[in-house]
Length: 364
Image (cartoon, rainbow, N blue to C red; front, side, top):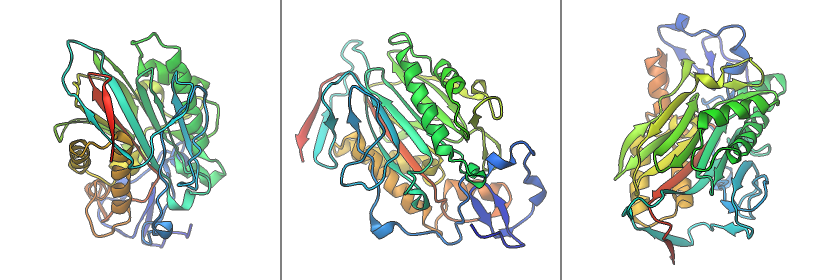
C-alpha cells in the first residue's frame, strides 16, 4: 500500500485526503494502534470487480464440519460452517427455486430459523479468502459472524484465521449448550477462551428460542430485524473511536467478551433477521436492506438469494464514490471530508423466522 500523502490521514481502512477540522480528535492508544488499522485499503482508487464476477457463498449441510468449498460457480474459498443432523448434503442452488411461508403462528408452535448466506471477500483478498467468517447451525437455531481486523497484515498476521477459529469454537460451544436455552454471551466467552490464533476480530452470535432472539454483539458487525419492510431493531455499533471497533484478541490483548452488548428481542413468524459484518452496514442504510428483504419475501425468494442481493448492492455501494453511505456519514460526523462507500469483505446472513416447518419450494 502506498504511503499516505503529507496531507492525508490513515484512519482504519481509508486514506482521507482532505482532513477538515478536528484532526486532533483522531488518536489511538499505543497498545491498540496496530490492530485498529483494519483492512488497509486505499479507497481513492477503488478496484472494479474482476470481470464483473462475484464470489457467492452456497449454503450446504453435512453431518461434519468443513470449510466452505464453493462449487464451480465460485472460484474462492472462505470459512463457512454449517452444523446439522442431516447426513445427506443438501445444496440450495442459486435462483432455482422460490418458496412460500405460512406466517401464521400455529398455537405456540416452535419458531424456526430458515437461513442462507453470501460472502464477498475484498477484491484484493480473493486469493486468501478474506478475513470474515460465519456459521449457520440449523438444528441449534443459531448463526454468527466475525470480521478479522485487517491491520494485522502489517505485521504478517492473517486475522481471518482468528475469526475462523473463533467461529469454529463458537459452534462447538453452541453444541454444548442446553437445548432451546443457548446463551450467546456464554458461547462467546467459551469460544474466546479457546481461540489461540494471532489476530483479532469482531463477533456477533444470535440464537432463536420461543422466547425470541438472544444475541451478543461486540464491535461493528451486527444485525437488524425487519418486519413488513420496516427495521424494528438494529444492534448498536461498538467503537472506541471512529473506525476503531471493539475487538476480541487471543489472551487479554483486546476487549473482553463481557464488553459485548446482550439483547433479547421478541420476534414473530414473518420477521427477517439480517446479520452482517461492517462491509454490509458501512455501505447500506437500514432502509435499503429492509427494502431488499421486503421485495425478496414478496417474490418468494429463499434466504440465500436474498443474502446475495443484499451483498451485491453493498459491493456496488462500496465502489461508488458519488453516493452518501453510512460510512461516509460517520466520517463526516467525525470531522473528515469523505464521500462514497468503503471497500471491504462483505458477509451477509439472512434468516427468515417461521412458525411452521412447512416451507415449500416451487420451481422458478
